[in-house]
Image (tube, rainbow, N blue to C red; front, side, top):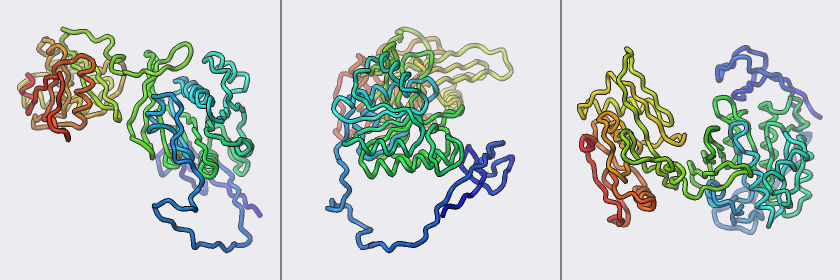
Length: 451
């Protein structure tokens, strides 16, 4: 016998209440309560189960599930890199991004490439089959042997996927459009999103195929729905990019089977997305030598080294409170670097406007960019260019010391590959001892030595 229970669920955080409230007491959101009816099935009789084999060991056992332990390669190098070297059978991946950024385009190219050697399915709840075929023709993948479907009923989708023998990959676009009949609320609500995700995870773990979910994002840039959705899946990927630039970045923020903060770089064109094998050349394409206020930062995104151009502008200010503007970097950290340069190096920025920009539109959060930012600020203040073919990386402390950062060897190798000959950094520690290469390293103990 089934019971129907009515409750009010916050669409922002997933908290539920027995009566309607104007404000959610958990997250503080206003007018986010929606009444939802949930059907609960009562068990008539408890069945006795044999629990002797409930626990197991870390070693391989004959009772293990028949999941293939080898990764599935999509042969799209940037996508495989972000996933940790390929897709893990039985895993569930959540892909989020702004509207129109290219999520569906990327996944259609992935499923078309993988379908050359494997059985794949693409289920859309937002587009009709005719629209999917038109997009496939534009991307020139309309000849791929992909099983296409347009439906929003999850139980019908799961039954159809069960009938596909040796299924390797199933893409659900998007999870906010799916619904189950046991819940009477509309598609996209917290209860529906949570229930649909649970059903898809159970099917993926049992049958051993990979499920990729497309998730909508809110105006704050986070995936819509309850935060628990990101905890349920195995991998969370964000597809980022600026509309004024052609490149797109696929970033891993959670991965149970690989490194987090790994990125893959793509270029958007008329025929879809193409891989960018060397992102440093892309971001340094417009770099000009002998210009004051610029410095090259050797950064690390995940396990990949990337060289970026830091631009700074110091101009006289006629305001009571001079402006401090940072694009692509933390403005609070900019204020800290300015304070260190004034207190420890005797420089004066108090009556000047400061503008800082990461060329190319990429956002960086690594503390190793402190030294490059300081070099760009000093160069802009004194109107003198930094040394040619030089890179900078290192963290600056409040006492003015330059602290070493990790992966120095990878940064220097990337700089050497692109023709840079000098590096300004802190003490380099390497497991292999002295790092050999054509890059001349200048070891700095204090930021005052940079002047």
